[in-house]
Length: 373
Image: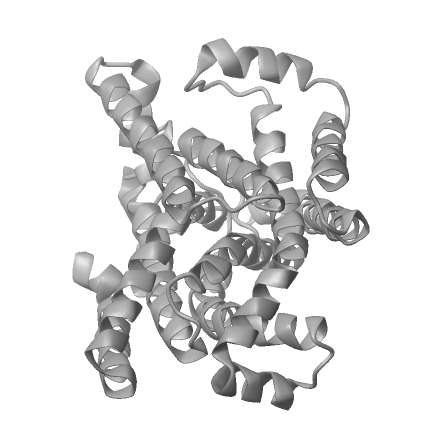
């Protein structure tokens, strides 16, 4: 199970470390290893949320996410995206941006840091909206009932997440940003992107419920697997979500190395493990067994969003960002274990529900599931 799920990650790690050793010697090897650990620590909560969305996708779109999606994540976000940002910021063409990255790494890093407030505003608002939509929704399972109950109660106010996120953006832009206009525009674009992609995914998913249910393509709890347009928009949603998580890691990487090849290798290896961990969570039905993991991941996302907004005005160490996320997820995992040990009926049902008749948590058969992906 471990080798089948993490096999490609192990292979990419070996290849990446060999390239790092040949390219940068022992120092390059060490830097790539550190960056890989940094990426994993910052994006573990991303894997949990990805797994929750991946469960709703058909086997075809699951495979698309795990093939084309990983190419976008590794090469698009970890190599092309920084070059694109530098090119836009310095008004350079792509070739000039590449030359700058290799010829003047310090100036390249400086331009990335100059663009960070806009990047943080976009990613922070996207993640903030995701977090707020989660905590403002009424749920049967409550990890922190003393906090989640009142939040769900006030969440009945329509568009409250937009109001709270917009207010936070205006406060940060008006009080801490060097260029409030750029930060506001970037943040609003992040909110619009979330609303658009999430809304389109839900729209096409709702339209396909009757047809897919008629074909028997539902999970153990009546979960309808998204295909066609619904699957495409869920895939798009996951890619934008991954990009939002990547922003912090890409910028943070420049504190460790300014070499674009070293950064791509290190963050690319980390991204592979996040993808493999996502698959592992889906195959094992971990989110059904440990019911509070999803809650912990979303609270970690909220913490990351706040850190990104704070970093617009002052630097937030990566150790704090990664530590908060990891701590919240570990706490949620421990709470889930305690719930299961206490013999909670819902918890026991969730543990048993994912394995009936050879079905995976997604509700597809063994032959259709990710085990063949």
